[in-house]
Amino acid sequence: MRERGPVPMTDRMFDHGRNYHECALRCLELRGAGQTFLFPPALVLLAFVVEIYLKALLTIEGKADKDLHGHDHGNLYGRLSADMQARVAARYEERHHQTLSEDLPGYADLFVKHRYAYELEGAHETDISGVAQLASSLYETLTELQPNLVRAGLVHDRIITPNQGIPIVAGPD
Image (cartoon, rainbow, N blue to C red; front, top):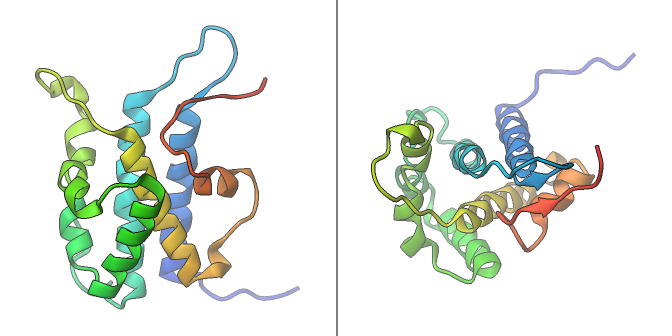
C-alpha cells in the first residue's frame, strides 16, 4: 500500500474550484422534457470559480500568506504578478476576443451581487459567456503551470472547449 502525503494547498484549491466549475456547467445543461437552464446559479457558480482559481494562482505565486479573503475579482487579479496577469489576459483574449482589463470591472462583484439576485432592483445584464471564458482561462493557466492538476475526461474537455457559457442540450440521464 502506497502512503500518501498531504495534498498541497494549490491542488486542494484547484479541485474545489473544478468541482464548482462542473456544477456551473451542469446548470447550463438541458436534460429531459420540462427542464430549464439555470442561468442565475450558473453565473454565481462561475463567479465563485473565478475567485477560487485567482486565489489558487496567488498561492502558486507564494502569496497565500497574505489575506486571501474577499470576493472582488479585480482586487484578486490586481494582486497577481504582472507576468501572471499577462498570461491570464492573453488567454482570455484568445478565448473571448475581448480585453480582460475592460471586462473585469463588470465581473468584479458578481458573486456578491448575484448570489442574492432577488435583492437586485431593475434590469441586470451580465455576459455569462465572458465570465465562463474567464473561468476557463484561469483553469487553463493553472493547468499549464501545474499539468498534474488535469483530470482527463468529460469535465476537463467541456471546460477547455472554445464556447463557454452557452447552454447545451445534454443526452438522456
